[in-house]
Picture 1 (cartoon, each protein chain N blue to C red):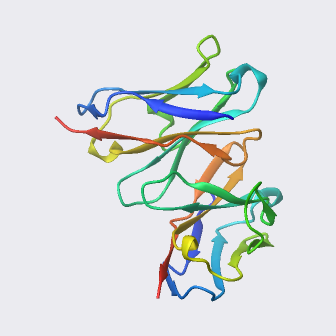
Picture 2 (picture 1 turned 90 degrees about the vertical axis):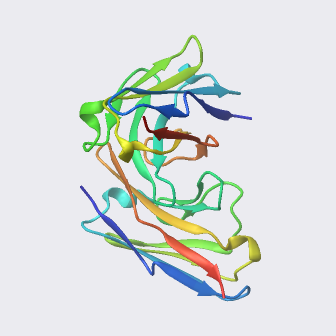
Length: 108
Length: 118
């Protein structure tokens, strides 16, 4: 099983700042099948990024994903008030899916 | 517009079987796509339970495999989750979700809270 470890656990930033979230895999992620989700309180998660760097439909271009192999990053270029939420990475390997434990992005 | 809606009992007794249904609207399940279940204990992270293809192929989380059954009913445009021998550790918000590919979850239901308690 591929274990995903996200860091930091909590990130406190101000609107307008740049956010960098990390997701590290215990072994190489097959074909970069790595996604990022945003979850706000009381809501279902929303897919932001798939295949490590492709934005899902309707996702603003301030969200970008990068990385390959075992190290992946979600970057939010300029934080908007609505971006403060919990972010999860998720990977797929041979009919098996795991999620990271999440990074909480708080308003400073 | 494709929508997913979970339904089922909000309270299940320990050792019994949790049963949930996801009703799909705006899209025919038999047209394709993968259909999955994910859960989230209150205040905690996400856990994949399993996924199925419309034809019936299923894929389960190995840690839950011996207790889980996911099935599709194309006549009702629904797919279902059964989790047997539940304990308090199975208390969670249960989400159904879908994607054209098995790799991610593009569209989610709103989720339903299931509490395991006597």
